[in-house]
Amino acid sequence: NAGVTQTPKFQVLKTGQSMTLQCAQDMNHEYMSWYRQDPGMGLRLIHYSVGAGITDQGEVPNGYNVSRSTTEDFPLRLLSAAPSQTSVYFCASSYSDRGGFDAFFGQGTRLTVV
Amino acid sequence: KQEVTQIPAALSVPEGENLVLNCSFTDSAIYNLQWFRQDPGKGLTSLLLIQSSQREQTSGRLNASLDKSSGRSTLYIAASQPGDSATYLCAAHGSSNTGKLIFGQGTTLQVKP
Image (cartoon, one colour):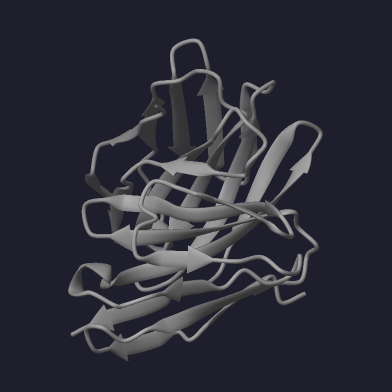
């Protein structure tokens, strides 16, 4: 199994450009989420989904959109890139088993906005 | 609001030493507590998952404990090796069925040969 696949691995954007970070999982997990990791800030939740067609905001949602049309895919859209969005982005999927969750992460997308 | 704190932020030890990494959380109503390892420039690798009904989990030289009443988890690494050098992150799974994780800021471990 591929697990959680994120593309691209690296991206440089100019301020004001838009782009979509792709995330796909092949484990049939119901839950998916996006995090950003910044030095000294740890990982912070951007958006999450509890199933196809259902999404909600996390801790730092401004400037990002998501959709979940299928169980497998959970793309993250940057509407108008800003230097403050320079970060490493991680996608995660998880499932519920016997009352607990287990989470799996992609390898990350390193985004620089100039 | 759940907050997760990890102490210390950085740790340097000689090879062979046993060590403990600490994680504390403010809301005891968690589903799980999960420990991850992150190598520089890489993604997160799950090390141990402790369900809320469990007290500890073991995998090889790693042992993680969970005390919900005190809001603490520890990751014990026995006989540390240079290959253990990495950042270790703990994350609390929230009390609702969302799959959301609240992360600590991590402990960066260096094991010197």
